[in-house]
Length: 149
Image (tube, one colour):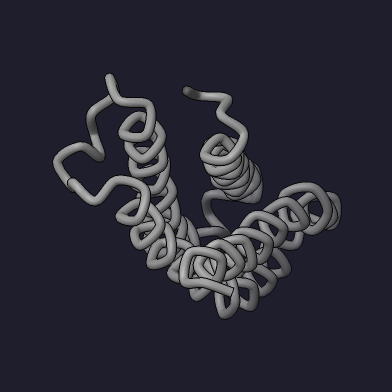
């Protein structure tokens, strides 16, 4: 397997853990926590998930940058939305920034006060992270399928 293929496999593995974990969290665990009104359950689950989710996200970021460089070695073209490859890399970068901002907000603002904010805000926050993560999958698939060309 060549470097490109190895990077794709690692990138997909990171995406499976990151996106899959958030889909399970948003669709199964958080609704159960909301029914029982146990905010600590959601906090414990998200804290435990972060131990594998954050490294998976970091793996995606590193492999994503390397793959972007292989596709378009000119960094200046990464935000050229007139160029199809630049458009997809740019969209990925925008979605990545949104994801990182949401994760930082979740970790440092919402989690310390989850008891006072309530599970409703936590559910919406996780749903938004999940939605943006699914958009990243869609844009990532577009590299091979060509949806956004």
